[in-house]
Image 1 (spheres, rainbow, N blue to C red):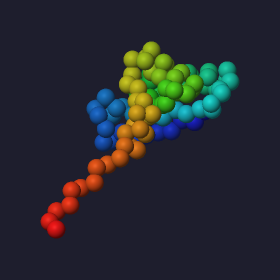
Image 2: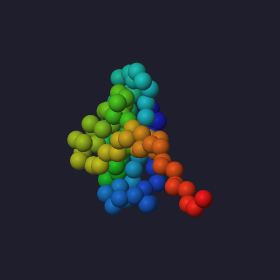
Image 3: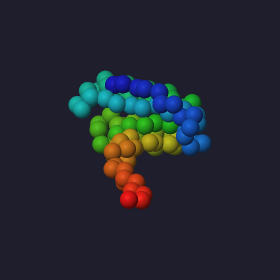
Image 4: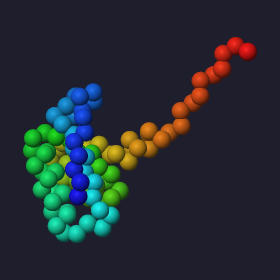
Length: 95
């Protein structure tokens, strides 16, 4: 399992306590699942928000742990999807 710190200095006030991202293997074993719950639980006690892909086993477990602790959860699947949305080209002027 991988945990990474996300800079929240320019994000919404509810994320100002801190935000960690959680990612894991596609087939986590019991030890990795336990590590996820313990790690996320440590951060949420301090008011950190959690970011993960809830469509993965570790992401779903991180989301569930965040929800249980009543801290914000950021679905990184939606962020990635929004970033890849095509931008409209500016209209040409003159001609």
